[in-house]
Length: 160
Image (cartoon, rainbow, N blue to C red; front, side, top):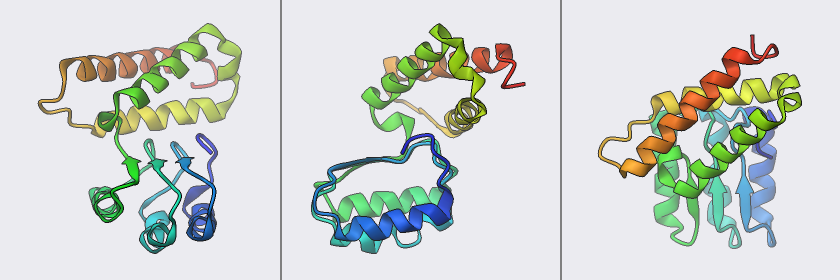
C-alpha cells in the first residue's frame, strides 16, 4: 500500500477489514496520506486482530498524539511491531535509501508526480524527526536520505 494515497477515509475501510483478518501478518501503509483522523478506530481493530505482526506507518502526517496512540497500541499488543518513525528501525531507513538510489538510477521513475509527492512527504517527516542521542550511523543515514531526496527534488522536472 506504500505510496498509494488512500487517505484517512480510505484507511478506515482497511482498519475494519483488519479487525477480522486471519492471514495478514505485515502491513505497510507508509506515505499513504493518513492523518490523525485516520487512526480513530485503529485501536479497537488491532485489539481484535490476532495475526498482524508488523505495521509500518511512516511518512504520514501524524501528530504527537497519534504517535503516542501507536505506542499505546504496541504496549497493549507486544507481539505487534509498529514503525511510525524513521528513527525506529535501521532496516526501514535503509529501504528508503535503496528506493532513493533506484530513483536516481532510473530517472523515468520520477516522471510520476506520485513519486515526487512521496519524496516531499518523506522529507517533511525526516525534518520532524529528533534523533537526539541516537546511534551515529542512524543519524548519518537520516542526513544522507535528506540530502539525496533534496537533490532529486531539485533536479527532477516533475518535482518543480
